[in-house]
Image (cartoon, helix red, strand yellow):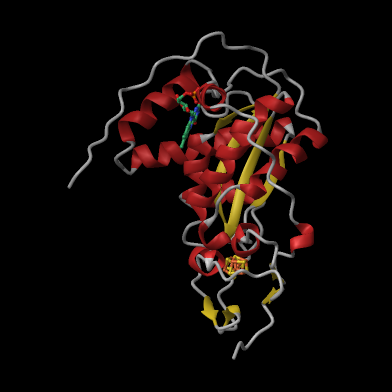
Length: 273
Ligand SMILES: Cc1cc2nc3c(=O)[nH]c(=O)nc-3n(C[C@H](O)[C@H](O)[C@H](O)COP(=O)(O)O)c2cc1C
Ligand code: SF4
Ligand code: SF4
């Protein structure tokens, strides 16, 4: 007998195709005599696959109600368009001085909610900073961390030394690219897949940004400093208690356009028996 009210199946509509059972990532659905059943009271990751895959509209799930779902639009993008769209994404490092409007930032981050996260955990928290003094302090603090890494002779020593030369001696902001805004991503300290989840979310933002007039670049040095848990940076950003920093992205309105899409290294792949 089913033990919980997680799913609701319209038995008149269900054709017992078994797709919902086979596709459930948590493997918590079973095929009973009268159609799909759920026999455990935990483990649903609210992914909505069972509802979305049902060919007859028979399945519903209390965590991902059918009525809140949106139909998948008919495919309007060709293979070539998809290829060109992905390939034309570029890191933008030359920004107009004004920070992006809040409404544009919200659009940018909203799409991140649809990126994949491990176990559909979705627990990304965004901190948006555009105060010029705070941005400058973040860049300086990241440089301080890099100097400490050089001092400690870590593997990054040579690379960081060169970066610090550019930053301090040449006075070029190789760390923050004078971006008018930084968006930090944090998540629960116990979330072991936090960095990977953040990467997925930021990839969505980077791909969506040009459609709303924004440019982005992953702020790798600042991000690395935060992921290393450098306290002065965490304090500056104001990472909430019980959270850890897992990502950082520069954002602004681009003041340049790219006319060409460069070639990359050749594909490295082998098929094994
Ligand atoms: C993890 C990661 C860290 C990065 N860190 C920086 C950075 O600190 N500064 C920067 O200017 N670009 C940074 N980038 C952007 C890469 O340099 C860029 O993606 C690469 O050169 C390819 O260029 P494209 O993004 O324009 O195609 C980073 C990218 C990734 C994925
Ligand atoms: S929402 Fe996802 S995890 Fe939950 S029962 Fe449906 S398919 Fe399984
Ligand atoms: S996918 Fe829909 S029709 Fe198929 S078994 Fe599940 S509820 Fe029934």
